[in-house]
Image (tube, rainbow, N blue to C red; front, side, top):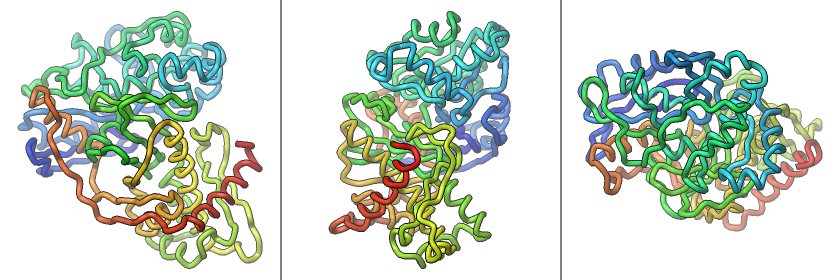
Amino acid sequence: MDSSTQSCKVVVCDADTGAVLGRGHAPHPEGTEVAPEAWWTALQQAGEGLLDSVDAVSIAGQQHGLVALDATGQPVRDALLWNDVRSAEASDDLIAELGGPQAWLDAVGSVPVAALTAAKLRWMADHEPELADRVTRVMLPHDYLTWRLRGGGDAAPTTDRSDASGTGYWSAVSGRYREDLLASVFRDRTPELPTVLEPSESAGRTASGAVVGVGAGDNAAAALGLGIGDGDVVISLGTSGTAFARTSQLHTDPAVNGFADATGQFLPLVCTLNAARVLEATATALGIGLNELDALARQAPAGADGLVLLPYLSGERTPNLPHATGSLHGLRLETMRPAHLARAAVEGMLCNMADALDRLRGAGATPRRVLLIGGGSRSKFVAETAAQIFGVAVTVPEPEEYVALGAARQAAWALRGGGEPPQWPAAATAEIPAPDDGVVGMGIRSAYAQAREALYGK
């Protein structure tokens, strides 16, 4: 199961081959705070008729969200999601209190931003202290659903390394909770936290007897579903954008989240708030569909004659500009055209992700190819432009729910009881080689960097 920001997706797979035997889907409410019960309802709807006869289940979920429960197991408020930026000031305060970004890198492997659970706990402590006083358990979205699958109530909550590493109080450096940081973050409150299990462990069983895998954060599950190896970098163009790679060692960098992965290694990750939504918003502004946006963008030359879109339509996480807005640069008579705007939207989105790729290089990743996934990857024009701007080969895997597939693969792994995860190879629909010289892509990126630095100085 993939319990994402927008919906719950269920895939039922053959445990040996990974062949998909059934699918389900149910939407989640919109907004940046959601009642956790809505996720549980969607999971039941998406899994109706599919989950009764399976041998094992596992849940991958959106990371960082704050689920705060009282002594009766009920949420004290709606869950704050990763994309709720009201905690931006709280994250700045936490960085300063511990002594700066390096202190956080040394402590947990990541520097707080508005998305991380720690920042949301601090916001809650300062703005809703009466509710904070009632909190006895803190979970992440996938922890909550795994707990509910096991009956909730007195069942001991569990989590995994990948999702715990996105809280700000579990250390990917030491592999332990930093309860001292939790107490500091939550103004001397120390709620119960889920037990962190190893990747192939079982968290228990459902009422029907199915093995419950430990689960994972969505990006770690996608990496598991894709079966990424050395030299692979995944760039996901969904609602948000992510760039991540699997590494055997944790390289800390202030702009990179030092997450754990779902196999026992590490998953340095860079996240942006704006990816495919940039294309959707541009198509809406032009009064056309996404397919028409592709065709329109092809009518403008590479670089859009100097028109640059900074795609910070929802603020931005990387670079850390939570209150930024999108902006157009290089408007002239010859660039005030629909085709140029369409091309600038694609290039702006991809330049933002190219910056993320550079940050991964700085954290020790050595990409030989990019696996492009998510809704934005289904455009051939986007994939071709990505190879040009990234300067490396791009592979577009066959469209699939890779987060849910990763969770299914983990469930099959838990069913085996250990060893290596089952091998479920991912098929590719497109292989685009790296450009011969990269000059065009470097020119596009240079114009983008100049616009960004002129406005934000970074």
